[in-house]
Length: 574
Image (cartoon, rainbow, N blue to C red; front, side, top):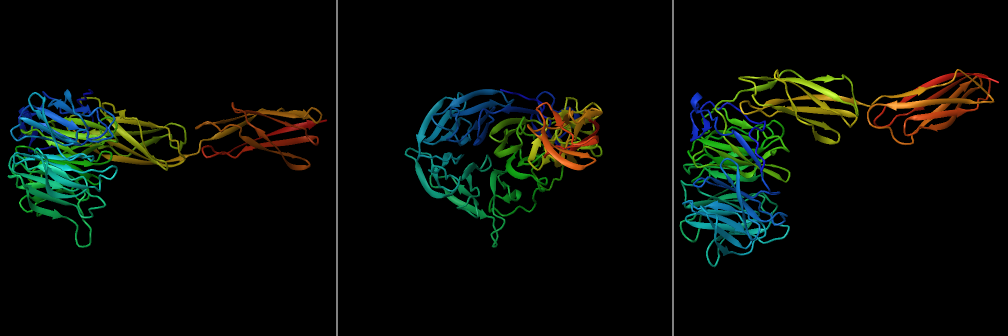
């Protein structure tokens, strides 16, 4: 298990509160969290992510992978509230959905053949109740003292397969409700224990996806409010990623990748009078969660560079207190919040977040500090040398400024080069105590290269706005050197050794030089000369007349090198 306590991220000053040891509380100097890491990141042993559940009674976090093609043994991975792995619960087949009973005694886990029940205290399996076979990854929710689940059977077409809503019983019961796609189920929370929600991700069989609610206080669920979001012109359809009821059950937050975080009235799904501020430009909503005390909401997103992927702010949208902002950087700890990848502990003291980067996933245990400050790049980046060439190092120098104290731990800036071949992540570099840094790169493409340098923040500083510099990358220079004799004879001929050298990428093999001889009889093109692997060559010629002869050798260059020409004049005698 990898455990990282400081991962170059974060964020903003949350004046009104912090995530403290007993929940989200008012910020004072004595309430700053010092005993526990502000951000612990754990690499998850999975290549896919399906569900996250938090058991506050036993201080455990459960994660499932939820894909039938997963090469690792099927299991539920269990962590404590500090991010330490406790165990992996082996399951007969791939585990997908998760939920914990309202009384905290039972962990329910869905798999293709049915629903597993585990003792939440001992993690011992109690039962496996069969259900209609599922190949698409069951979603699962506990509500009304009952376990509700989805079932879809398809190979390769799960995104558009018809999924049915079932109730756990023996034998399994199909409720008659269903629709197309990977329908996701969510419990109503402590304030609405007899209610659950169903949401439809976007798919080609559902051009106008829905969210809906069910009353779950008897064996036959009764559907309540429903909403689809597209207008008469077909625009504005929901791109569903996650859903969370507020602590009091009166509001419903929906993570919509197309429109951001929607806040609805839970009783009829109408838009709440006050909405959250838009996510930062370029961020697409992916997850949402409310703290158990009702004070805070966490909004996850998929974003690039230093654009925040996670905002933690007051749950009341009318409260304009600046949110905490977290930016995740990529291959070290994930680059975005995974859909349905946010959950608070019941007391709000910790936020658990799953981040992804390709098919890699991390679990973050986040306890932000009391105060964060701004960071910024001071001016533009400077370039050295002033003329960049392909295959040769270029240095970009800059400086960071910090409000408040400078970072106590070593921190880095990250950089990405974008050219005609796409984006390339460069090696992160540390900055000095005065904030200065140097990013080194060896561009491998002639043309325009745009460098974007990011500071993703630290535990007490927000991410800085990226600084961008465009560099014109030219061809590398090449040089022809001739070692010609001053005199030669018509009988002995002219022998001129030489060397072709170049910076940047290696010269191509078996390249040739054009040769032109100029004497008193005129100018003549001679046979090309081949350059050896070490760059050396030899020109041999039999002069046709006496007096001076000038030999001009030329290489026309290639995609990476400029052309080169050299001349030598030889006095020819008989």
